[in-house]
Image (cartoon, rainbow, N blue to C red; front, side):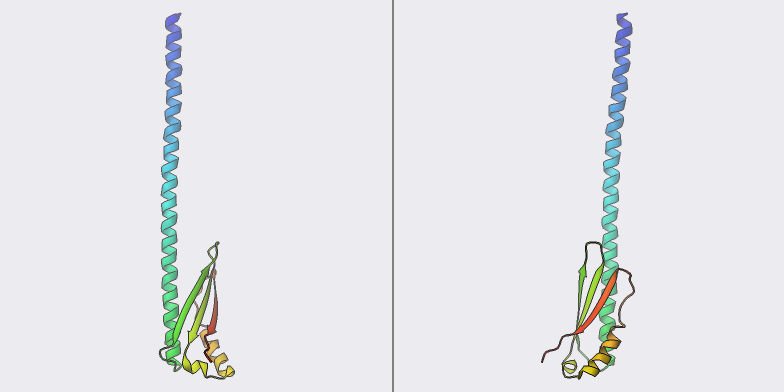
Length: 135
């Protein structure tokens, strides 16, 4: 009988050891897969930021080209962005040039109509254009 009890005890120990090992391995697998997903998420954020940086660069370039064609060489163009917690972006394009300072309101409004067409399409972005007037 004692041999039988010893054998049962050994079997129980093996079962417990199996389950402890299984739980430890599952925990490790979960930890490593979570770390992999997190690094992919960071990469996606970096790729998304690169996408927006390129769009922003092109927006400023197009704005300057438009202003040069309209006779406002060497205009100051500043792009400001605010990114909300949910990823929505609000852009403000501020334009400065001495000639714009001296324009009448109607002429400025016409120029603004042209500037407001220079945006990039993105459902998570909104745009506002303004002149920096020094008088």
